[in-house]
Structure formats: structure tokens, C-alpha cells
Length: 298
Ligand code: HEC
Ligand code: HEC
Ligand code: HEC
Ligand code: HEC
Ligand code: HEC
Ligand code: HEC
Ligand code: HEC
Image (cartoon, rainbow, N blue to C red):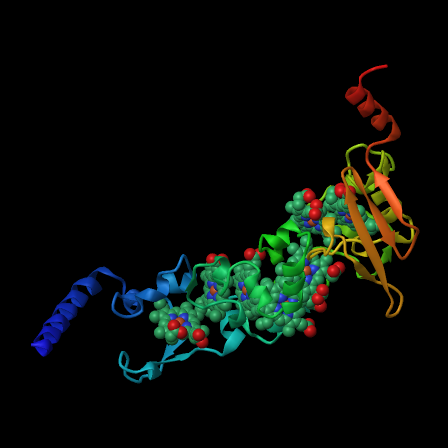
């Protein structure tokens, strides 16, 4: 009884496959419903897979197939398989470790994926798999940087290789002091307004100001020894408010401590480089004006 059902089902399938085969191109043969159709189900399907060009990666060996996996072998091994069509990937001067090793499959799946760019994981996960140190910074951060928190490491990094170290999309200084020039902070200015570093006096270009005296300009905009952003901010996350770090590398093994306390209109910095300093965005004039509106004209 059971056997009869199976035979019947087999016959239905056999004839159905004839009907089906006449309406699909021969190359689609591998993707038919009872064989490898599942390969093309996820949201993003690799173009040679949706085109049914299985042979561009799998070569028939002559062994019986279906029935044995030995019917096919890979056309090339590892990254070489991918570089046959993607020879522009990883040609930049500083190549990423796994790309150098030809391990495209550490991040991509060959057939299809629910993630963009055929990635094996969504968002930052794909990067945290190997970069646990950055994951810890992000998870323990008291203040988070939006592009990192939203899972887009590659808003700033290029995944395969880059002209700018470390795998950055634009230049960003490695040293702690640098002359102020737009190009030196091109990475940050992809998203942030450089006006915060231009005007000595401003009432709106930055919140890091005492009254209208711009403290970003004071620290960063110098002809020779301007401080770089990382002497205060951690780009992957800060253990204090406003991405401020509590320790930054100093001379030798000595780390400069920073203790940043935010106030309603400013903050106080206790640092290794100067006496505690407080800034307040409300100037004396503004404070007087506010007092007048609160307590009324005299
Ligand atoms: C871009 C190259 C590429 C194309 C095109 C491609 N494959 Fe693959 N396929 C691979 C690689 C690489 C593997 C090994 C995957 C692994 O190691 O996980 C693989 C593995 C497989 C496997 C083994 C099981 C599995 O899912 O890992 C099957 C079955 C398979 N492919 C079928 C197909 C079929 C059918 C097509 C055409 C519709 C196709 N492939 C098109 C690269 C490709
Ligand atoms: C036979 C040629 C061929 C081979 C081999 C090949 N690809 Fe592709 N790949 C394409 C084509 C065509 C596209 C679509 C056009 C484009 O984006 O360049 C594509 C697109 C992609 C994309 C972008 C997908 C998207 O929708 O954003 C990724 C990622 C990718 N391939 C990775 C790989 C990896 C990894 C391998 C090796 C396992 C590989 N490719 C092997 C032809 C190939
Ligand atoms: C460390 C993870 C990682 C490795 C390893 C890797 N990729 Fe990618 N790849 C990505 C990410 C992330 C993107 C999406 C980038 C974006 O959307 O800006 C991507 C995008 C792509 C694209 C889409 C077009 C483009 O260039 O952005 C192709 C094609 C591609 N990769 C091919 C490859 C090939 C071929 C290899 C192996 C030589 C490889 N990748 C290795 C992470 C990786
Ligand atoms: C399979 C493991 C692996 C994955 C996944 C991975 N990386 Fe890497 N990454 C490495 C290795 C190994 C190195 C060190 C390479 C070297 O010594 O040049 C590295 C180095 C880096 C560097 C520093 C390069 C330098 O010049 O110092 C950055 C930045 C980086 N990865 C970002 C990313 C991002 C962003 C992602 C996610 C798209 C990612 N990595 C995913 C293994 C990985
Ligand atoms: C807003 C831009 C930006 C984003 C987004 C970003 N990074 Fe970075 N990353 C940098 C900069 C700048 C450096 C250079 C080191 C520094 O100044 O802190 C760096 C350095 C690195 C390094 C090498 C040096 C180190 O600190 O170990 C790795 C690895 C890295 N990033 C991984 C990641 C990962 C993983 C993500 C996503 C979770 C990510 N980055 C998101 C800007 C960014
Ligand atoms: C891909 C876009 C992007 C890049 C590149 C980028 N940022 Fe941001 N950053 C944001 C966004 C979005 C916010 C949140 C909204 C805002 O304050 O503008 C933010 C906020 C900040 C904040 C305020 C954090 C807070 O808690 O209010 C600091 C500080 C900062 N970024 C520093 C940097 C530095 C330093 C660089 C360069 C190394 C950089 N950013 C590069 C997108 C970016
Ligand atoms: C001397 C320490 C210091 C340096 C160096 C520094 N910042 Fe800041 N930054 C701050 C402080 C403190 C705040 C918080 C201001 C507030 O909201 O009270 C801040 C705020 C910000 C904000 C939020 C918007 C704003 O302007 O208030 C951004 C974006 C930012 N910084 C980017 C940068 C970039 C990019 C660099 C390098 C070009 C940099 N910072 C260098 C201390 C610094």
C-alpha cells in the first residue's frame, strides 16, 4: 500500500517534469522544484544562479547525477572561483586579511542570501565574527556613534581593501597631532559639517563652545600641532557622553585620563593636560537675558 503510493507519486513527478521541462530553458534544469529550487529562494540571488549558469562554477565530471554529489566539481578553488568574474575586488593597496587569503566565503555565500550583497550575516555581525575587540567597545559604550550602532561598519570602512589605512574610505590621521586641513579629516566630513572647526566665534556651528568661543577650533584648528578627533572622541563608541573616551594613549605607555561631566549647557573636563575646565554655551549676556525673562524687567 505504502509502496504503491510512492510509485504513483514517482510517476506523477516523472510526467510533471516533462511538462515543466518543455517550458523552462535547459540551463534552469537544476533549479526545478524537487532539485535545487531552494538555492534561489532568498531575497538576493547571485546573478549567475538566477540565470541558471551553474556551470560557470560547477563542472560536470561525467559521474552520474542526480544520485551522487560527485557529478560536479568546482571550476576553481576558493577566491579564484570568484575572481574569474570579479577581478576588480581587492585590487586596492591595503587589502583586508581574509581577502588577501582568498576567503570570500568568510563573508559571502555563493548562491543567495537574505542579506544585501550576498552577505552571510546582517549588519555589524559579519565583522564582529572576527573583530571581538570592536564588538566589546560597541557593546560597552555609554555613548554610541550612529553609523556603528546602526550596523554599518562599511559607512567608513571598505570591506575588501583601501588606499587609506585602516581600510578607510577617506584619509584619517594615524598620529595625535596634525596641521588642520579639510583633507586631514575628510572621513569625518563625509557626514559632519566642517564649520564646527572654522569659526573662532560661533553661536551655532558647534556645542563645544564657551559662550560663543569655539573650543573645537581652539583644540583642533592649528597650523602645526592641531589635536586630532581621537584625542577626545572614540569613533566606535565612547565610555563617556558625546563619544568622549576616559583614556587616550599618551607618551610611551602612559595613558592620559579624561573625566568628562556634562552639564545642562556645557561640561567640565578633568584631564591630564590641564586644570579642570568648564565651558558653558550661555554667555554672560545670554545668562543676564534669561534671568530677565525669568525674573522680569527691573
Ligand atoms: C558563483 C559560483 C557558483 C554558482 C554560479 C553556483 N554555485 Fe553552487 N556552489 C558554489 C560553491 C563555492 C559551493 C560550495 C559551498 C560551500 O562550501 O558551502 C557550492 C555548492 C553547491 C552545492 C552543494 C550544497 C550547498 O548548497 O552548499 C549545490 C547542490 C550547488 N552548489 C548547486 C548549484 C546549482 C544548482 C547552481 C545553479 C543554479 C549553482 N550551484 C550555481 C558556487 C556556485
Ligand atoms: C560567472 C561569473 C561570476 C562568478 C564566477 C561569480 N560572480 Fe558574483 N556576480 C556576477 C554577476 C554578473 C553579478 C551581478 C553584476 C554585478 O554586480 O557585478 C555578481 C554579483 C555579485 C555580488 C553582489 C550581489 C548583490 O546583489 O549586491 C557579490 C557579493 C558577488 N557577486 C560575490 C561573488 C562571490 C563571493 C563569488 C565566488 C563564490 C562570485 N561572486 C563569483 C558574476 C559572477
Ligand atoms: C570581510 C568580509 C568580506 C570578504 C572577505 C569579502 N567581501 Fe565582498 N563585500 C563585503 C561587504 C560588507 C560588501 C558590501 C559593501 C557595501 O555594500 O558597500 C561586499 C560587497 C561585494 C561585492 C558587491 C560590489 C562591491 O564591490 O561592493 C562583490 C562583487 C564582492 N563583495 C565580492 C567579493 C569577492 C570576490 C571576495 C573575495 C575575493 C569578497 N567579496 C570578500 C564583505 C566581504
Ligand atoms: C574572517 C575574519 C574577518 C572578518 C569576517 C572581518 N575581518 Fe577585518 N580583519 C581580519 C584580519 C585577519 C585582519 C588583520 C589583517 C592584517 O593583518 O592586515 C583584519 C583587519 C581589519 C582592519 C584593520 C586593517 C589595518 O590596516 O589595520 C579593519 C579596519 C577591519 N579588519 C575591518 C573589518 C570590517 C569592517 C569587517 C566587516 C565588513 C571585517 N573587518 C570583517 C579578519 C576579518
Ligand atoms: C564613523 C566611521 C567608522 C565606522 C562606522 C567604523 N569605523 Fe572602524 N575605524 C574608524 C577609524 C577612523 C579607525 C582608525 C583608528 C582610530 O582612529 O580609532 C578605525 C579602526 C578600525 C579597526 C582597526 C584598528 C582598531 O581599533 O582595532 C578595526 C578592526 C575597525 N575599525 C573595525 C570596525 C568595525 C567592525 C566597525 C563596525 C562595527 C567599524 N570599524 C565601524 C572609523 C570607523
Ligand atoms: C557615515 C556618517 C558618519 C561619519 C563618516 C562620521 N560620523 Fe560622527 N555621527 C554621525 C551621525 C549620524 C551622528 C549622530 C547625529 C549627529 O550628532 O550629527 C554622529 C555623531 C557624532 C558625534 C556626537 C556623538 C553624541 O553622542 O552626540 C561625534 C563626537 C562624532 N559623530 C564624531 C565623529 C568623528 C570624530 C568622525 C570621523 C572619524 C565621524 N564622527 C564620522 C555620522 C557619521
Ligand atoms: C579637546 C577634545 C575634542 C577634540 C580634539 C574634538 N572634539 Fe568633538 N567634541 C568635544 C566635546 C567635549 C563635545 C561635546 C560638546 C557638548 O555637546 O557639550 C564634542 C562634540 C562633537 C560633535 C557633536 C556636534 C558638536 O559640534 O557639538 C561632533 C560631531 C564632534 N565633536 C566631532 C569632532 C571631530 C570630527 C573632531 C576632529 C576633527 C573633534 N570632534 C575633535 C571634544 C573634542
